[in-house]
Image 1 (cartoon, rainbow, N blue to C red):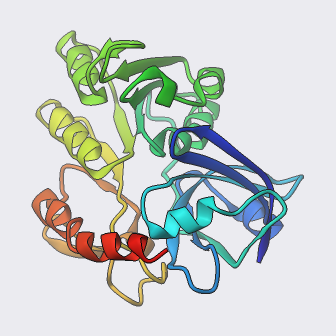
Image 2 (cartoon, helix red, strand yellow; image 1 turned 90 degrees about the horizontal axis):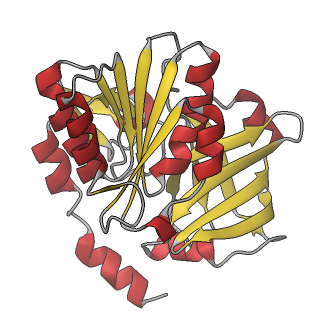
Length: 271
């Protein structure tokens, strides 16, 4: 069990927990995740590590309250204990000097690109972040991103901040204006990452996406998180969760995302 030191409802449906987890904080790297079980009756929830403090021994996680599992997690408060908190899991992002790097974050993915931006900047890269939400009141960590990136470009569906539209619309405009990127990373909902990969493919820009399929144990034993990448079967939990977005069979991914919609509705009704 780990204790919740701080809970913040940062924007509608997105929560931040800071927990005591010194062993995880010592080993965490940008792009890794934890498996969280809110209580002994709840399911396992994979959540990307958004930040950590080695000296304080703390871990920050951000999650979207959307299903029964995350509703149970969101019901916990400062001072409560999380039943199980396991990590760091998965492979970290490959951090090195690429040149000019674009990072795209949407929804919970905005928090996930923060440690990546910080690490890439420390390696001497030029870092441009694209932060996306439906409206400006759903954007968060703006100042944190701006403190570690060379530039943060905002896009909102309603046009209330930055460019009107989605992150892939803004990225496409920039690429059409001959803006150069040596590498693109995208973290967020499946459809957003699919659109980013589709946008960058004609330009031949290596694009890494952080996949979020259904996951159970997080150690490669169950096979629930399998993906088809470059014609081969990969497990997101141990082979990823980061993959070349141009090699993913997105049709399979998008179809499998719908597999448990009915069961998820029933589980929420039974809470």
